[in-house]
Image (cartoon, rainbow, N blue to C red; front, side, top):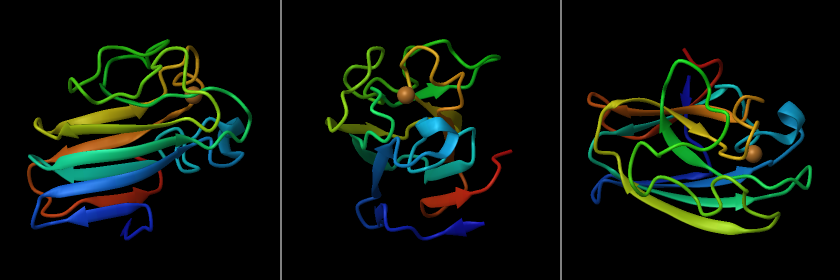
Length: 151
Ligand SMILES: [Cu+2]
């Protein structure tokens, strides 16, 4: 089920979309979540070729450092941050994590269609469920956010 959300800001003329991402927004999954979602509960879909800006903040419920990257899907969830799927698609402090309250801007072009992980690069966090889906679609005409078990 796709839905509009207050944290997505799409500009179809500019083919640009912004997302406000709060790491550890609430207590879901022991605070290991993005905007409250973990373990693939959230799917962000972006049309191929669009510019993506992610305004990332560690909201800090749980008082633990976190980070964000877009990574290629592999056989197993990585133990910690890996090379991002796109050269700019990661926050500062990928492995140690951004401190509580820290912010970063992530900007990249969704250049290659596919299904990716949006995960936390701090050791053990992605394996602990701090990951969601990021899909680059060759058929979607607009960005979308879907809540529910990702397939
Ligand atoms: Cu984390």
